[in-house]
Length: 493
Image (tube, rainbow, N blue to C red; front, top):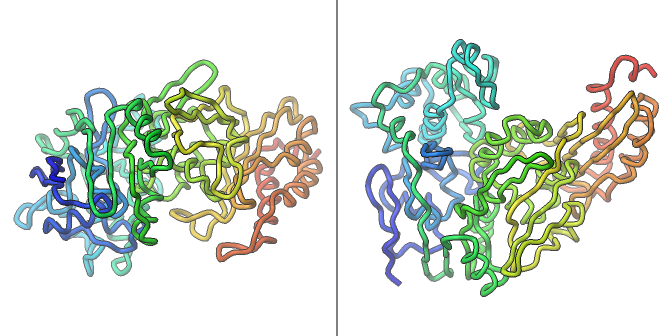
């Protein structure tokens, strides 16, 4: 069927006519002759495919957001504004990011360079990026306000913006030098000025092709009606998991429903007794919205894949897959989160501890979707997220542990511990919690509880870690938590 849908790419409307629903944004752009973005891994791990998309940033503003074009369906960009490396500058008039990369030797073979350019440009235009001196005198203290250190430049540039971009030949020092040399956007910069206007409203979309149908409904009631009509349809939000299935395993969806821009799934509310987070908010958006209110999640976010992935990944998607090695479930279990499920019959709430039923199986019915995640307040005083993986960033965890403890007058009043990677589902460490609660927060008690924790779950041997290693890491994590949080009296007791 002919389509009138189109994507605004570098200021030019590019029709989606004839584009199959399974076609990702990278292949769509390259078919348009925009070959700067490359396919390096097709899994969202290398960043060679990075492009910028105009996304909502509260009120009437928008934010240039770097995303992995290899993962996003082209259909999901219907009505949106995309900028590729070709659209930032020209050979005669380089963009400031392109110029700094060139003069500081940030490119050799050039394969990864366009992706770096787009990720770096998105950070260049970040509205709350300030030089350190300015940040120190401002009243802002959000998650992106930092002093200069080995991961943040004096110009306010956060190197984590490039954590999803890999370079195989240049080396990262000249790329970092280019990032740290950037000043603020010049007066009249068109991309900076674009940020002062609202992002495009998501359009109702329906594309049909040989692989199936992609439909983006206008609102939640329409989405639930479609899901009731097509139970088991693939729900596509950030597509950071589904995109890999399409690219690597060749899986196709007979019917896919795009839910990433549904207003009802993008709510964020802080109340007296809970924080409710819309299931389609990206992790980057959640991080900005929380503003440090939940320290456990503050520790989780930097360890969850890369900024490129967090710009697309959602709580709803991470929980919806039912994966036992997702990073958010252990933290959310420790926070005693509740999952809000929606269908044409209405909402129902399920404690996350009761949500997982088996390997990649949950209580969510085929006609339901995750509308929101609710976290009770206040949160516990001691919080930590420990991720054991082969790489510090941008890696799948071998073991992930979320801790939330209340210690009052030296006694553990409450302990909640979530575990990932040690069973067929994410689990609570119930035996360890019982061994801690009501006991003094002392070295002897923690050592005994660590022995219990090492026996939690049913870890397996695989290419990431052996079962004995996983068990050992569980107990070690509790000992580490105690060493980092106990007072001298509690350590010596």
